[in-house]
Length: 336
Image (cartoon, rainbow, N blue to C red; front, side, top):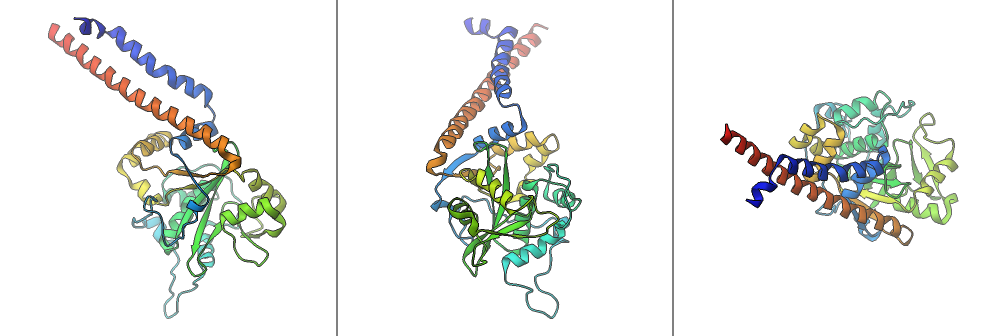
């Protein structure tokens, strides 16, 4: 009898209020676009050491989501042939080959910006029309790496405690030299040391802190270099020196083709990302831990726990609400 009394339309309204209130409070505190990205980042937030990020490009960790899918037609038709008729391979230099391929992105033309947030084929077409932000460019470089059989991974750095104010870049693997090479296609450069040897992301980061005068930026194009001068570029990266992280995947094509993600993407990018996170398809974020960023890491870890507790809280209340509604409608049908 007591259970029957508790199951009422008023009880359903109370449960709905209990579900809406914490979400409303969360949105009130994280209402801007960059803060919403912080929430997303927190849900996939993990921590690794510098040493754990230094695996070679021919030995990807088992947990890293590597691309294995076939190329979409729109991508395949712009991929350069590594072997020309009657000739040997054009180049064995992965950086030269990637830059040759990236030329299809019209890197010598000024960009109009604007986040694309679409599948790789649409993203490529939009970039060729001078649109897109840094993450759109890194996505396409990931796909080009897959097409050219060049190991590639994506880094990012933040300026607001691993939130949405930041930048994304790539690293490509040079098998012959056994080293990673940093490549910022969006801002149009890659860094080299005093010996003119291309630098990895972590070498670049460490040299920024130690002595930036030892860094030279090789521009892909003067027209699309993303800064007024090299000093401004180095200042920009220096500001994010303690917030570097790896995205633990380069399977952008497979991600787009996942049925649930594809369905959610037709509704909104936010729903797409939430579905991807819940289904385990969204890349994990691997922050590089160091003494100077432990407070930011701790904040993100606490936020991660809070968000996942809230998620399971919402699931439990939703199931309870569903059970109550089924019971109430069953009672009504019996009365009629």
